[in-house]
Image 1 (cartoon, helix red, strand yellow):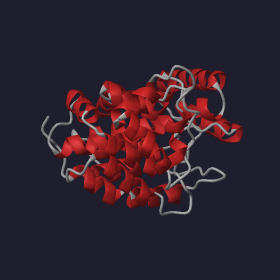
Image 2: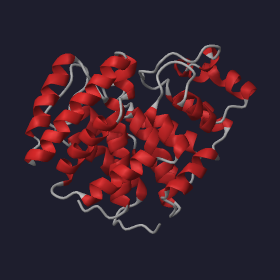
Image 3: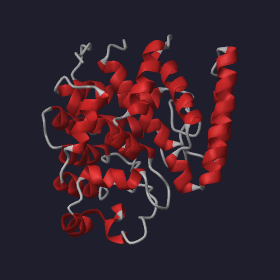
Image 4: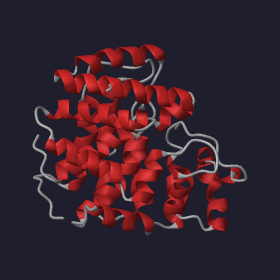
Length: 293
């Protein structure tokens, strides 16, 4: 698909990260009106800018794992720690595809399928830059625990695990929490492209569209980070509360009900961070397809 943007793909990715965190309300997440105890709005802004060099590498044709590792390293150069690890995991292959004029579901999926063991090693190395909330590895795969960072390289090489293989394992584990970001990778980013279409079909300020996109995504499926940090029941309850709030937002045409939910989630320590990752990726696709800012 041809591009319809005045910016480069790397610039649109950086802008998508900025728009995602500035959209408000995003119940349970940092936005321009809310900080969390351990993360602040300005740290997300700094993380967005810091990731730019890695995103440019992706646009320039660097291997996806290498570009991702550099993007996370740059993102980490702020005082808050992990602000946008999951966002960058989604954005890196999207930027790579867009720079070649191939921003379609099929092209991005094939780009992800073509990743190598070296890409997997670089992905694991990225975990050394920031602390990332991940579930325990499947039984018998302790040597593939992402928290091992570079120490997992021998196991990756022995098993000949590409980054695609790693994502496939995370997307559909025999036990544990299924990772919806990994599922996007192996399925061709269906949720991302659908969300981008919804953003483009929406109207009004882009930051309001981002907030509505977040609520739709949260109402659509349990959030991986909530499931990881709490449990499956909490994640499903959060989805149901988002669904109810979304219905009220659509009925009234106002985001005020989402403001109330945002306050409740922050008070309860509910942080649907994986949903925010999807919104950032969808904003990028929408910007590439002509979303005006």
